[in-house]
Each structure stands twice: as structure tokens, then as C-alpha cells.
Length: 237
Image (cartoon, rainbow, N blue to C red; front, side, top):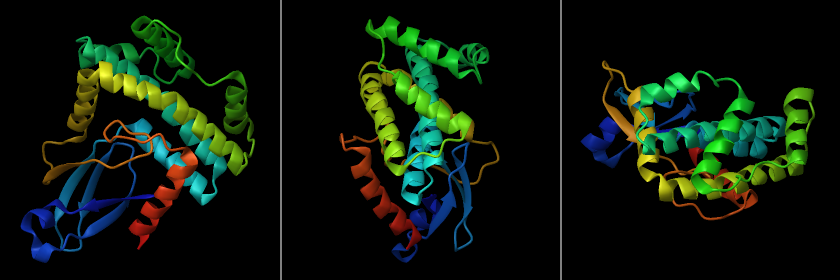
């Protein structure tokens, strides 16, 4: 899966209304340094958070027939969302970035501790236990990731839909009740991606199946895959 990026200088110069596109692989840091066909160098920062991109990668893996990779990416998306949720809620309450980073170091790399932090923070904020993967889905995930199970397309699709069903309602809650914290978390991500000696920098947003930025329908994963196939073909064209 590749990300189509417009050259910001070509757009600004409006060179015969021709805006070259560079198709580039997704990066972990969300920072894309490109040189367009006309030789312009620029930096584009993708504002989508890691959990959004990881879910999209999982969807693409299903399309490409890599079902173990799809389950792994969906799982990583879920776990990365827990971190984002905690960050957004705490930022909303005025916790400083440095304090969050210091505390997060105590649970970094420990998924069970992160899940526990998410569960109790959610309980504190909403007065109820959050919806989580049920025991059978957890066993399925562990079998795929830790025991080498090779899932079918149907199994990967069901698992991805389960993750989607968990995250979409919580994202809506975040955007409704903690919008300031969400914007602060996204803003910190954009600042972190910048460097002092950057070429011209632009910020880019893309529509993803699981999205903080764009208004999502409640389409199923299966239906969303059809649209994603069309996008992928357009990038390759």
C-alpha cells in the first residue's frame, strides 16, 4: 500500500495546473520527504495517527491475501488506540505532554498494563466497562500472532470487523467529549514530525476506514474494502 502525495510547490506555483503525484510507502513517523518529477523537494506530514494507519494496512493486507498480517495490524491498531485514548483524555484534563511521556514509559511495551490503564480510565470517565474483544477473539488473536495459526480470509474479516465495532463508538465519544484533548494529541504529533532544517512543510490528511478527522459512515469492513480497492487502483494507475 502506498500513499499518494501532491507536490506542494507545484500546487503553489500552479504549473499549468499540473500537480505531480509521488506514491510513497507508509512510514512509522508519519513524515514524508519527497522530490517530485520537477525536482522540488518538500516534506509532507500525515496527520493521521498510527492506529488509523495500522487499521488501513490491515485492510490492505486482506485485499492482498495476507490474512495473518491483517490480524496483526488490526491488533496493533487496537493497542495503539488505547494509548491515544489515554493521551487525549489526559490532555483534555490539562496533563502536560512531558508528564504523560514520563508515566507512559512505565507501561511502554507492556500491552496488558496499557489495556488495564485504558479500562480503568474509561470506567472513571464513563461509569461503565468498555467493550473489549471477547475471550474467543483474544484466543484467536493469540493463536495467529504467537502460535503461527494461518487464518482464513473470513476469519481475518470477522476479526477486523470486531475491532472496528469496538473502536468506532469510542472514537465518537472522544470527539464529542474530549475534542480539545484529541486536537492537542494530534497537534503534538505534527510538531514532533517537524525539523528545524525542513524543506517546505505541508500537512496532509487522508480518508481512512477508521478515522478521527473525517466523518465516517457505519459501513462494514467488507464494504469499506471495496472502496479501498478503488483507491489502490487509482494510485497504481
